Length: 81
Image 1 (cartoon, rainbow, N blue to C red):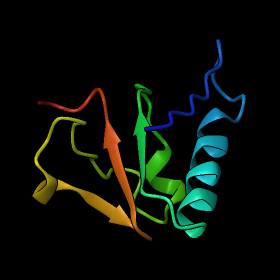
Image 2: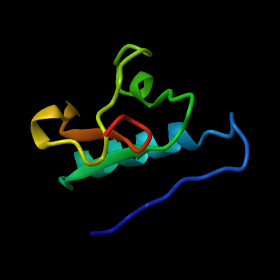
Image 3: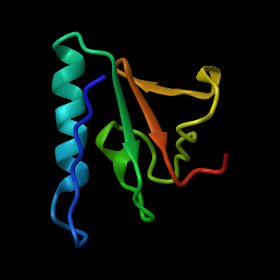
């Protein structure tokens, strides 16, 4: 399984935007995609048209708890497990 990591030492550098759009492009190309966010002040749901207060399930949550948008599984490493 390939892994693509976007990271920055400071906020506001566009890493969430970049990760979301890479995920969208890969999904449109037919890949199975999971986008995992590790941000404390998470804006990932906004990039997928979800409400900002939306809580994403943990990476380790069961499949039935998944938040799927356009075939992309959205997860959070900081979510309650």
